[in-house]
Image (tube, rainbow, N blue to C red):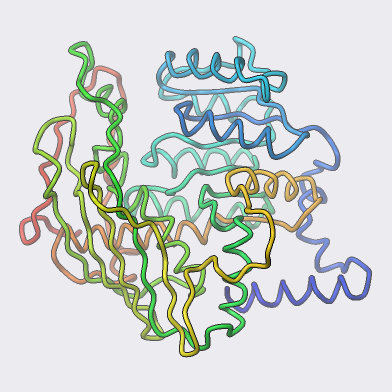
Length: 422
């Protein structure tokens, strides 16, 4: 996707043709710097909701060389219920080896998982926590499976980016939850587009038009504000990032992947038409439309929407070129469809063990996360936002204290012209 990537691909091709492994390729082989070799690997999970437990299934399904040995979550009921769910699944039960001493509860549970004897840290909490958790895992020199997105505000994503650079220096393997990057149909099609299959790219489009995500239908009277906002995390900007960050990232990441870079500017608009102004719906928008511009002048038209059931759906990408167009996954060779959620874990383990190419998605998907935040802030404020503006923004949404009984005021729904970009 850039000169470095092309050079690395060329190097691998030349090595294959020669029938030897070059010294340059060996430098990035993870087992030479981590000593993983053929040892059996141990994985720990931070964030044990539905997404986290499915990541465990996908990792175990994708490789024979990993056991699940440690877990952390702020809610004990998440741990007990989902461990039982995994142990009742005959396809993975014999690899679930989490003893009571490695079940950690609380806001510091992530540190205890990282400090356990694990090789891989899986991060699947709500995305507001991603920068702190990723930084801690990299400082501990752990390989990481990191669910997208990589933060919810510019300060946090820049923190993630700093840790991403360190992960590259340490040659740690980092796999994102942007699973299209390991879906064969996308991989082969993007490669062909970048090699001129549809000519010069002239325009791009991305859509995630679907239904709302509501985790809690009502608030238990015993739940204080912080507990409630964690139970219903998708409804609150600080911990979710809004739909364009938490969900539409998948589509915007594909376009950034195709373009080999991030946009330079965005003009966006949005609001809440369907979402009622009730507590369970929090303070996020239900639609955002964005017009991005890349450095070479190519435009990306993006639209995401979460209306109630019964509305139309469209989850897709479109890349238009001077010689044709593509939906991003239509030029792959015939074959069985990929299971991308499993394939990404297989690729991660192969990277760690040295059985496949070195993989580190950290910086690329961090840039896609910042792309999404850039558009959200444009929609909220009503102004054009550039890459330089978002990379220098002082916006930090994270709470300064964490406690189950903490009182937390919910900021009002952003109103363009009233909401100020900082």
